[in-house]
Image 1 (cartoon, rainbow, N blue to C red):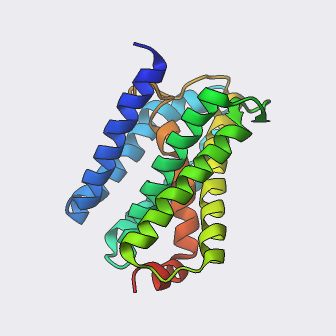
Image 2: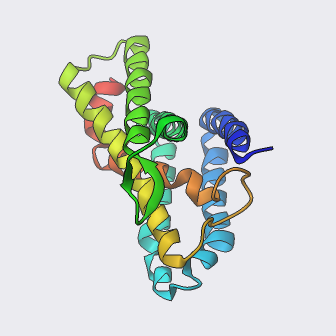
Length: 216
């Protein structure tokens, strides 16, 4: 089975698990988030920091702080929809950028950090996110202006991309290809959730603004 098929299968199950976590009782989904953080710290971060001991000093800022933000968003019923929005944005952008990049990617964005990431893939993820967020807006009858829709979608996709690129930079500096092997077709749990950590932090910083438009 090729890595491409592995990616499709595991991405599908990750989306199913993500939806399941959202509908679980808050305490259980928060424990799952904390467990994922512990897996990363116990099995993946030692590989990342093996050749870069200074990376141990990064842990409180990344990935611990963003993971705490995920738990905080999950704990408050008012802000919990933002966690669902984060999962949607990341799943759509990651899948869209990966598949479009694989099919027609020709122009690398950051070849020295991650040669596989292309402009075609980025815009593929952006277009998929526009479709997904527009569908959400229409389904929920949200009073979103065109400018907010375009600006928000571009911001989401850019931040998701930066989260992915940052984790690629960590692996490049550590001299490793994958941070873990527990997820077939992926580079590890951190590789799967790197964009989510960035997007959730962005949403948390502007949580009251987004809640005003999305939850009222």
